[in-house]
Length: 185
Image (cartoon, rainbow, N blue to C red; front, side, top):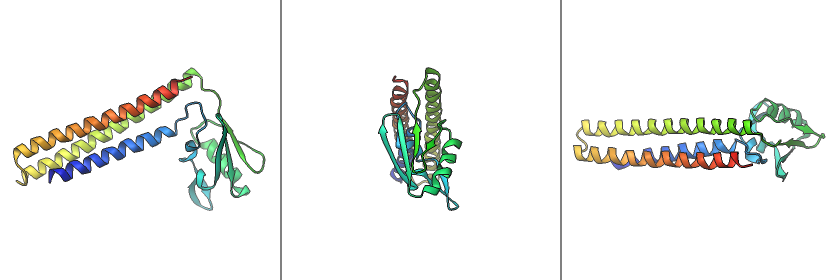
């Protein structure tokens, strides 16, 4: 019984870490990364569609992304979506492709990006603690319904804490890695 609760909580915590890590890929650290465009949606015939599903994205140089939409008439919509996004980039096009030039990051912008990454880490930790709380409530409910003993409850709560500590440590490691990448000149 408790194993099921613990496994479910562990799975949810792993997903939280994965989502945080995926969100951090959207933070640019000086180099052009095609994954930055994954979360930008474009109105494609009335359907919000991520840019990678509208055309090819390539990175011929470290600070340049080229977007080649499959339909030339999508270029204005893609440009608008990029301008509205929080990337702070100005796209330019030649009628066939869109160029995104990534400027060098200054010290102030690097600090802002680390603050954003830190905020995301805190949100992930809050989510993990919430999963722990829900799991412990389920364990207490099992004890209340006499489905497990008091010793089983105590052991399950200790295991839940270990799983939580491990997930929080993972979030901290992900953040530390991203912070190092951002602050690297």
